[in-house]
Length: 203
Image 1: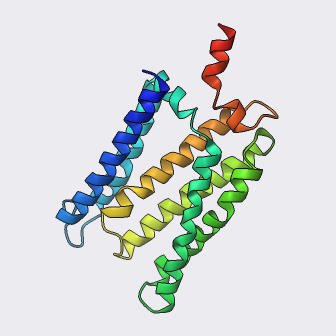
Image 2 (image 1 turned 90 degrees about the vertical axis):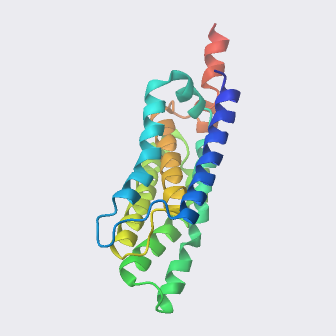
Image 3 (image 1 turned 180 degrees about the vertical axis):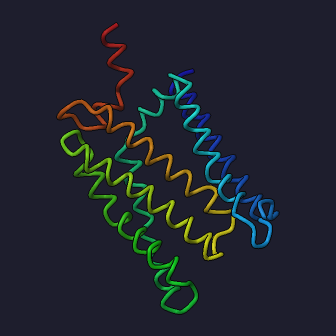
């Protein structure tokens, strides 16, 4: 399967996943048992990540496709998380408890504000450790926000929690995979993206 076909397939799956999340939200498919553990939320977040990891590990073609994705663009996508300031505003008006709003809000703002800087300044082998550390912090922020929101009874297993959170975690994982392959002194878009072209040139 070519990278173009993988791209179309991945786009179609993401679109179907988004629609499924919206439908599940509207139909309350993932309602938890009152006072019970958030099993459904955990599964809804974990299953997409597990499926991606399994596909990535089992398919050389899919791995090659993933390595054609620009880690700078995937990192820049995280900038939208600056919208976490809404949590702080709602907390200031007494709508959200500080247990959730403060760490989730400030964490999202920190990741959102620094995403452009990381994408443009740290996305090369000379800053590999800093780039990977930022990606890990971004993942930690998402996990923490979902965990605290669940404990506070604010997050339901539908909508953004079952789509955006695992999707952004997958983006972080792909960026880390890129960084681990970066040759010394080369930009990711030039080193990782044309990996298949190198094989063709050497053939």
